[in-house]
Image (cartoon, rainbow, N blue to C red; front, side, top):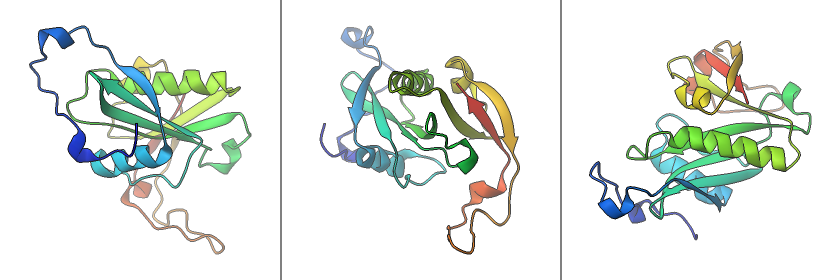
Length: 172
């Protein structure tokens, strides 16, 4: 697919041409670098990830309309070798309905095929989680906000505003 460049996105309008009405979302493998470029251009509150295990894209009518990045769990107690975390899901504003649910569902199926047994992700309290419910995920916990972030003596991390917000942990 090559390096993603935002200027090549064809903006889909609400008036879909008759020949495209039966077009469905399809999954496409992409590099983590390409997915991070997409996140950098379109995500509303998160920065690109520092890495990951795999990334996928959602295409509609041949155009990339969303990405998901899966990596090791950020919470070290969940990092048992069979658990993965969806660290980013990002879609363009004109993506077809259910694009996020499509990406979450595909990530879980791919992880299971790789031998994974558990997958988690997090949403902010202000987010509805409807795309996760649509993909069959359940809330299994909540993460309290912190004013200090994850900075430690031997590991410095840049504080981000989302650290100060309540989050829900979801599991597939």
